Length: 411
Image (cartoon, rainbow, N blue to C red; front, top):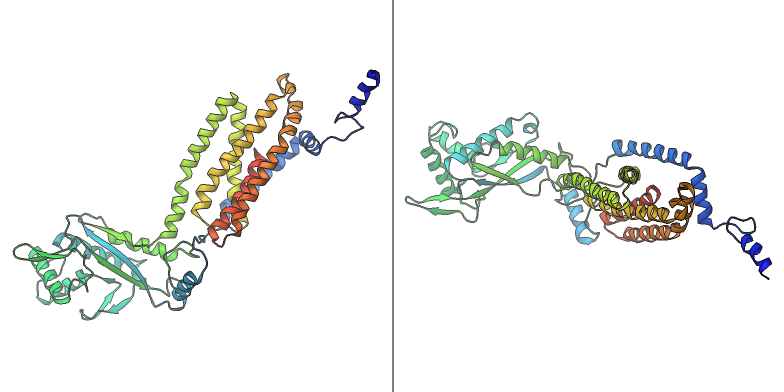
């Protein structure tokens, strides 16, 4: 009995002709025998991903609003009832607590004149009439224009050259005539002092531009714009209105939500770099191997290139969730794959004896089932977000699933 049992045990060994090795073992053996071509193919694919990464950057922003009658009606109203004017609203605040003082009024008037004279912005401003001004107003509705008219009508020069007393008197007369509400003064505007005069810490400034020249259609202050041209134009207007800001501060209201979202995503770059650095330090401390640190670092760099390149290639839009959350999650998943793979290889007696190839075959074959299960369940869990009706969540699910598979392959 004992004499016949040993040959039978040998015939059942996974490497013997009597029994085929498990699929995972055969796959790992195949990768070991073709490691050179596989590394070359990976390098070529990574280089190819640089093309969509650099040349196919998205110009649209993913919407974070759910579908529904309310949001659809808002978009339709913005497009179908778009007027000739593109309206930008700013809050102008006096640094000394009183925007109606001569110094901030004079500085604001100078900045408005610079806005109208600007070669890029000026030609796009609208001309319109106001009930309390003679002639046409160009682009900006502000108390400074009316004050300048009042000073000129009195023969005292202009707002820029008049004395502080003349300017203050003109501003007070205009407010008494028109009313603080028509001039969009702050709700805290009051008549104070002796003699009593109007004081306001801030007021609203409105700028109108030609909507057709800026691309037409309406504008909704929400994430998901197909073009950021109007937002960039509004930023240019704000920059000119701010000037040197010696006596005032200018704040735009909901001018550039999509541009800001994209910038916040790009600002996360240094934090992602710090995350990678922390992960590599952890790899070095655990494995005490410069080679392991170098390989994991290179793979993480390729992973970021794959993620962004594949996202651009399949047409995913710009999105702060895609830019910030997905890379951080994929770094953690990828390093988890690396820890299990390298750790399992090092645990094999063959690797301890110096046989790296055998250690790789046995270690990865032993861990492959668990790693595949982790990768598959994670990818499916992320893809569940693709059933959402919110565009940003759909993108997150697709990108995270792609990145999970990429992390498995690379790490």
